[in-house]
Length: 295
Image 1 (tube, rainbow, N blue to C red):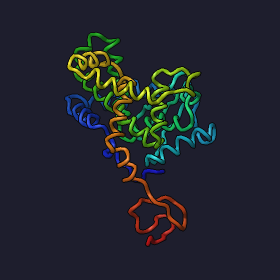
Image 2 (image 1 turned 180 degrees about the vertical axis):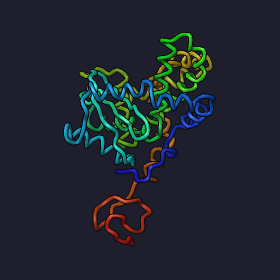
Image 3 (image 1 turned 90 degrees about the horizontal axis):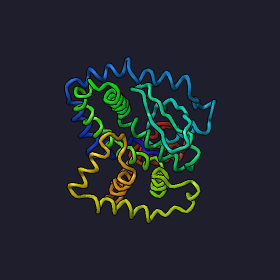
Image 4 (image 1 turned 60 degrees about the vertical axis):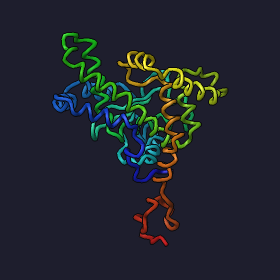
C-alpha cells in the first residue's frame, strides 16, 4: 500500500536528525558543501557512472525500472532517481548525487540474489536516504575519508568534522532500514534481507532460520551493552559507513516491537476512491482525480 503524505519525521531514528544537525552546526560546513556540489568527487563520480555503467530506464530495462518506481510511489517520492547497475556478486546498493540529480546504483548481486520483495527492502533503504536528504552528506563522508587516507597533512584539520559526520552516517542507516521496511511492508522479508547481507551463503537461503537470527541480534544487545563493550564497538566502527549488520537488525527489531512501525503504516495508508479506483489520502473528502465526494 502507498504511504500517502509520508513524512520522514514519522520514522527517522532519533540520533539521525540530532547528529546531522550537530554536523551542520560546525564551522566551515557550508563552504565545504558548496565545494562538494560543484567540483569534487561527486561530479567526477556522476560522469564515471554515466560513461561506464548500464543505465536502467523504462526502455532499457522496464521491469527493474518499474520496480524502483513502485517503491518510490510507496514511500511517496515523486522524483525517480537515475538508476545504474554496477557489477558485483554481493548484496549492496548506494545513492549519490545532490538535490535534483540523485542517482541510485544497484549491484548486480542485489538483483540476482534477492527475491523481488527483498529487493524492495534494499531499494527502499536507499530511497529512504533520498527522502531524508542524506545523500549529499554521505558523499561528503566519502570525500573526507579519502582526504584522511591520502593527504595525511590535512587529516588533523578535517578529523573533527569527519568523525562527527561518520557518527551521523551510521545513524542514518537505521533510518534507512526503517524506510526499507516501510517499502516492503513485511517484517519477515526485511529480516530475511538482513540475514542475506550478514553473510548467509546462497545455497542455504531456502533454509534460513529467522528465529535463531533474531535471538542472535537480541543476545548481542544484551551481552555487549556494557561501558567497555560500547567503547570497543565505537572504536571498531568509527570509520565504517554502516553499523554492523547485527546491530542494524537489533535496532530494526526494537522499532518494530515499540509499535511505531504499525503506527506509521496506520497513519499514512490511504483509501481507494470507489469511482476512479485511485488511492487518495485517507482524510480526503473529495477525490482529487475524479471529483467524487466521499460520504
